Amino acid sequence: MPHLNLILTNDLLEDANLAATVLAMDAVMANVFGLFAPVVTGYIVKSTGSFAAAFYIQGFVVVAAAAICFTFTRKPIHGLMRSAVAAPLAASH
Image (cartoon, rainbow, N blue to C red; front, side, top):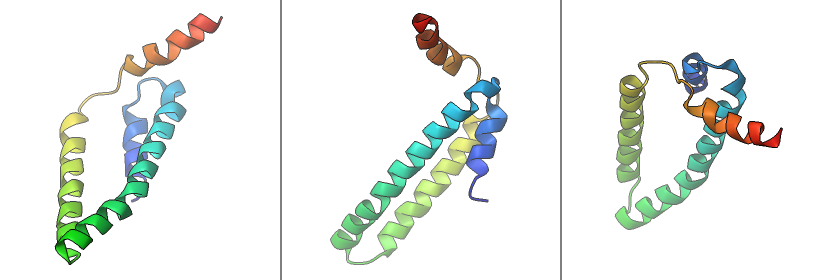
């Protein structure tokens, strides 16, 4: 189940040509959060003296992310990305 966000993103895309762009953006953001998560956890553990607060915060973030996915993903992603990607391509031709 680690790649359900990629499946959801791919299902919501209206234009299949944007799949690589959107999935790459998703991977970059996942790696950025993965890079900073241990640092933030370390600061929380250092300030509180235990891992309990870090785990509570992590649990809250996961529940908040699930709520966002369930509430904001009701319809396909339309031409929002298409115009952002097509404009530079049209200017180069």
